[in-house]
Length: 292
Image (cartoon, rainbow, N blue to C red; front, top):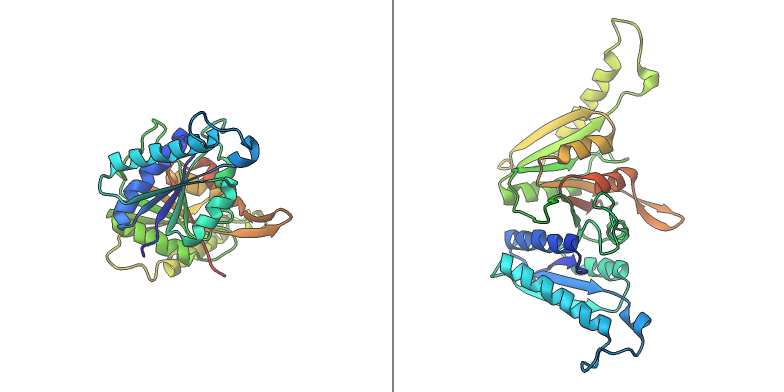
């Protein structure tokens, strides 16, 4: 049985744009689409029933939300196989559970309670820190429309965080570039620590060149197993990793980074780079779990 692409929907416009993106992706991959709405309507409504329907009114609304999303997906991709489900559960828990049996998990950048498109919704951020499969947060397309990829460019951040390489992220990005007939643009940020700089005119550039060369070597190693039929570009860019990747997201169809998760007081959390990129990327962002 083919694993589905799962989309978390809540009736908001960002979640419907995520449905559009996921429908196109499902066709590219030849896989079914699953639309999930989660809410604790039973806890908050108790025995309050919608008139004449015999169901809690929020449940009726939830079913309407997933059915509306399914109609939208069908209009976009008429031959797509779609299933829907509305569950009485916290959306964070429901989507993390769904990720155990999903090919890909997709959410919008924020939900109905979001204040501004520039800030990532708490559900998406929480799920991104715990999902078991690759997750895509659909950002960009601020005209409320998601168009099929037109830039011909998939960006992957190499060695994001503490890892020297990110093999799972590179594999995922390579596959996405191949499906789209796009260029794989691998980016590695580097910085020269202040204590390594020197004022001597003959030595001033040596520390920087050394760090740049190390970044180039990391890129070469990371891309060693990328299939020959995927066109690749390499970019060793000086600067803060979050800023470098955010800049690279402009004019890209997808930005891919490996998930660096930390065990902290409140459980698993994403690293600072992933957190920053998810908030500010100009295109959809794929977070790919890197296995230990």
